Amino acid sequence: MRVTVACIGRLKGAEQELCERYQKRLNSAGKQVSFDALVIRELGESKKGSVVARKDDEAQMLLAKLPDKGQFFCLDEKGKNFTTTDFSKKIMRLRDDGIRDISFVLGGADGLSSNILGKSNGLVSLGGMTMPHGLARVVLLEQLYRIMTLWSGHPYHRA
Image (tube, rainbow, N blue to C red):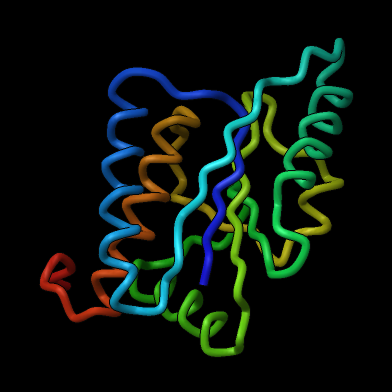
């Protein structure tokens, strides 16, 4: 299984360091559980004039960076709020069903267009609180890493 995280905005500083740390950990831990690699695709924000035009432009850029096959999920405040265990089971079911590529999409400051939301295989929420997009990316990567440790029986997840 390969996981792609496609996102609008380029990280710097502490958020970038945390993402790199979790990407490295995830790629290392994942080898034990048939996980190939985590790929992060950072895209610049659209320069279009209106919110609708920016969101549509960013949706096209994001869709172009996703694998041709597989499934993708958008991070959105209206999405399903999973527990870590339920999120793990969802990803495991996809893996067991033979899905080779799973992607997660994070929009820019304006959010995601209805165009990409409608094409996704589902919406995922990281909770009811608003957070910066860089922090949302860190939380997503940490949860993906936690899933890999759950699958391998590592004590990182103690719940």
